[in-house]
Length: 414
Image (tube, rainbow, N blue to C red; front, top):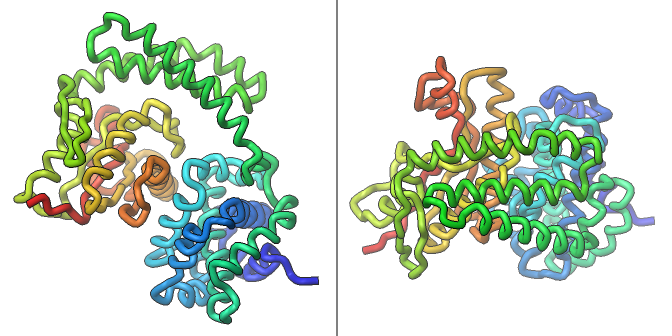
């Protein structure tokens, strides 16, 4: 009987590699082994769901160019012990958004829950699974047995072998959850539209985004209600009123500091309504100024992104600004960017570093979902580096917990 792809890939993991990965993540070897199995199955499953898309498969195999395949085959041990670095890190950062899109958070969570890993370790084993899968593909390419056509056939044949490894929460990975997703989206849209119409009737301009944020919060609770246990939902319901009030107060203050709304026209003819002092207006002004050079020090801080406390999960209220940034990038197709994540200096520096990386990755993943080519972006976590305010005050720490954007290649509009 032929060896399955899963068995072949997991066979690349030596006991030394497994122990090194467990030590780096601070987890037990059995939990890491389980997590690697789930992460590898999720990766292959997502690829298999698009096995008939030759352009997509060609893009995946194209990532192995420039000697990357050989680097992976010889460097798996170092990835396990030290994490993806250099070209391997770039590969992982490109691969994850392309293959998983907006599902990356859901997949990471399911891997963590099944394997008993922390959320950050769940992402860690997913980032290890990518080099493993790609190293296996590189072996096939090197042997002359793997091309776009044969890869599609292999992935389709592998689907039955993945079921025993996949977490139960990912049972819809091959498209079975399409109806659920559609119904949830429709229900959430209804909640948003109803909330916005009710809250914005006759309101001043600055209440409009606050109302949208509140409506999105309600929509998120609707979607969560499909999958969250009743006890957790009841607890959530008890705090919804207070949370909505906190969102309103914070949103009002943040928007008030950004000035009145203004219309910003983009080169493709589209128009954005954005705050006059917001990051979108400042970014467009910079891109339109031919005399403003690309610089390592020219960073633009997002000013309306919200994450769950201590996590990399973007809150629904962040969608408005991310959509604006995606529209700007579409209007300037030659522009490339670096997304940087930062934290304050409280807590464990290593944990802060991981969190900053995960949050930068989340923003890049969402921009890919919104239609931006991942080849135009990179993401990096800087942890506690480069504070912009005093970490001894709460206000300063809040400012230091940020996501920033730097233009690395700029369109010439002359």
